[in-house]
Image (tube, protein in one colour):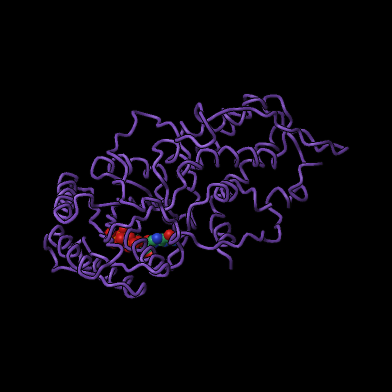
Length: 394
Ligand SMILES: Nc1nc2c(ncn2[C@@H]2O[C@H](COP(=O)(O)OP(=O)(O)OP(=O)(O)O)[C@@H](O)[C@H]2O)c(=O)[nH]1
């Protein structure tokens, strides 16, 4: 199955929540279907929106105090250009045969003509906002998205399909600036530090990324930096085998920074393109974890003052709003440069990705949509928005 189709299918749980919720909102306060089809109301061209925009793809405004982040990834030498190749999974542009969604089943195809309509008023906006909050978009983001949806459309009679399109546009607008593949540099080895709480999917993501980098012709070394948990090391070895990539380990309980240093030496000696370092994710003792991460960074900088070149924070979508506080915490523990959101399959909490983009503006490099090695996709804002709103299931 083409990846795009798989993604849509796997985001079904998120989409069904919004999809059915939107249909219900229109039905609750809606007019009966028009006896005569009438033209879709064209939303007036409005320059909304999130937030004041100098151009089409501004960075989203942080909700709170702007996140202080040190300079971007060190200006890589000559080929500083990001090469998205490894995460560029070929997508099948051919749309699937349309399926009848919830609305389609009730009222016929997703065509707005003849479908029930509801006047966009304050009550409806409130219901929309509540629905977005239940889909884990967070209060602030839900308010902003609904305000943007209302811009220039108050009083219009909209069908459920039209509302979904508008919502999808607004979501895509929030997501667009953060949809960025992980930058690759000419620096060898490019050091990628992978952080996140235990169970968020770090090991799996490292395995998937290593496999994709390898398929793109890059040589990769993995360092199993969570030395205190034998099971974590074993798991990483399994993923290394799957990806065909060497995994460096150290005796249980030994210093992760010392392993990271050895891994730097090995990666340099092997002429590896990438060194991916797994780390512990014990937030129970934050001070220890912060010191552990800081020490890893200090030690690898003895070999390369610009390392790590990327610090990926892996987040589990099923934790919903908790992902926001994890970003807050890890921004204090490490210089997070980008996010990978895992487990977007099988959760109804995909909306949290919108809240993350709106609040932090950190690049979202990829999303995990399953447990298999190829279940990691580049993040595509429009497809995500369509899948999330259920627009493409009609
Ligand atoms: N459905 C689904 N499961 C995933 C995804 N990514 C990871 N998982 C599963 O989540 C669980 C935890 O993943 P790990 O990669 O072990 O997480 P970790 O952060 O390394 O956890 P520790 O090893 O405990 O530090 C495993 O059962 C994975 O198979 C995903 O995108 N979708």
